[in-house]
Length: 135
Image 1 (tube, helix red, strand yellow):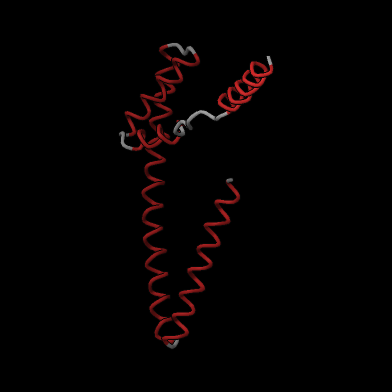
Image 2 (cartoon, helix red, strand yellow):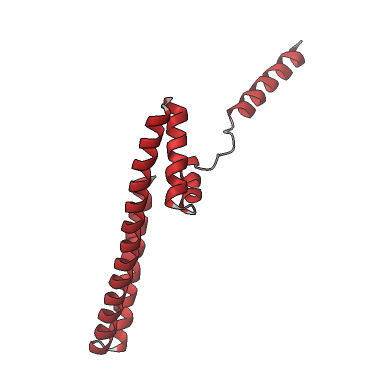
């Protein structure tokens, strides 16, 4: 009888531990969809968004068309903003590169190496801070 009780207790403990394990993590649905949408034209994105809203909100044909036109205007506007951001990033990088070249001509080799090390540490701290904030 004792053996049966011990066996039952062991089974209960292991079964509880087995069910307590977390299931495999699913990929982030929103990010995956954004990645797929980025490859589409503004017209395709507008159509897909209008179709999703039409289905989820039960829109009429007239409402769906108005939403599609609104989404198309927004998609084109956002494409222009993204293009401008890429251009601005390139300009900022060129300015940083010019600054670094001028700074390198002012500093000694040891000073510039120390400056580079400090900059690398600052960037690592910034990235680490972002990751901690999200966690």
